[in-house]
Length: 93
Image 1: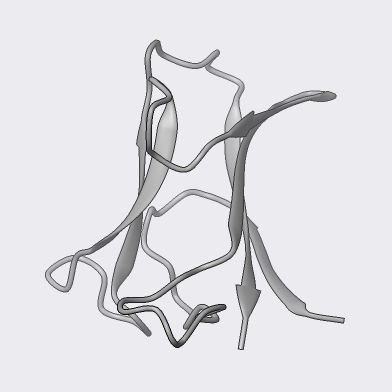
Image 2 (image 1 turned 90 degrees about the vertical axis):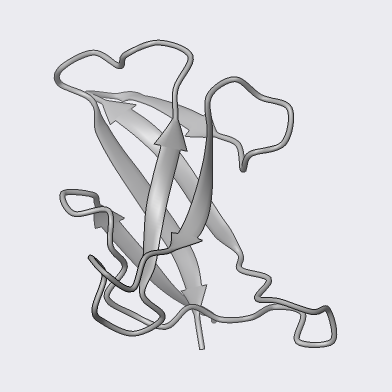
């Protein structure tokens, strides 16, 4: 079974190296799931493309000093409920 990174995000920096699921394609191809969790309600957040609320991974070597130096950036159409926690799960090598 594949290894997953799963964490409730406090810092947006990832402290691990993520698996490149398609090394033949230029640039890293990560397999991640990002979702907002509020109590029993889980709302998936799609990777950025056409959705107003979406996520992407951005290189940020100034702030993120571990592993791949990646930061999770979530763009939102509206502010989440204050009790909402954003959770990210990714395949690891």
